[in-house]
Length: 415
Image (cartoon, rainbow, N blue to C red):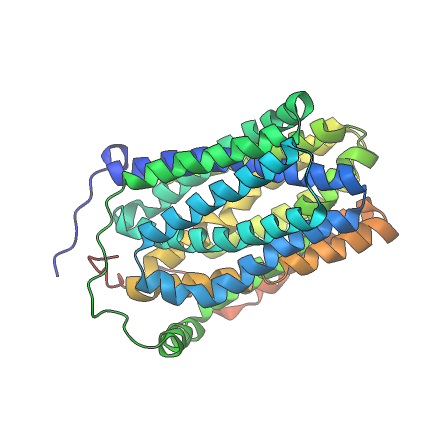
């Protein structure tokens, strides 16, 4: 089979359309997520209700990733992305309209959070697995780094813009803005050309296809161990963003929603600086060293954050955290895309993301207890120690000793 030829990223229409649509949607996510968090916290004033909101968001995101990889490999990826984003546009439009009319019971918020989390997991799987079919294999690090750069530029502007929008116009306006961003992504996806998978492929039962993918995953201990390390770090970092950051900004830094937004902005600025560097170099030779350094650096920065008492100090610590994060996020993603055969990539990404996000809901619940009974600063300190501990484990993980490119996987022409 002839290897498909792709134009450079700067002239690749499919890549640019996906980049634009996901960039707009990513910006909208900060409006929606901040609005949901602020809405729940202002209604109840409870760290536990805030935690429940994100637990019901995270649980389906983890479980769907385990089971949906088979369908992502079998179905048309573009149609999956279109269906999920159109539905999410309706969901955020509904809760925005309800908030505007004064109808936002907690059960309604939880139902939307659950549905958005479930659909987002499907979209993420399809989005991650479609990229290798849109760009050259050698351009995957630059492509993924460019996506991350745009997302982090959104992270710089998004929390601040969302905070200002909520302060001036209320949470309803922010929720409706997120709904509109999904509409933009739907139109961008309509511009992408992705051939349909021909009939006759992937026609086995779900159980057989699932077992086939799992058999491949468990033989690749390099992939398994990278996911285990991310799973451990997510136990610390899940609580940091979904529980600690808001409470820490309000109760310790005394900076309210502005400080909460600025923590996200400065973290994103650090991430942006690193992914621009990754996009520029285009290749990382010592992947294991980069991943382990990232874990140690992130953990140390989070531990330093727990000792800050003013907003400027906290922003320095969270910026350093952001600098280290992409090396344990973007590099493993590219490694999967480069070394996993295309016909099983959806299932393998599903297993990867299931393992990695399994601890996130547990982290949020733990964070609520820690913040309520031991104080938010101690909770943040524990989070940093957990991430550093993952780095220590990674030092002794033998399958990570030699993360070198494997023989080029089969690249099917249809997705």
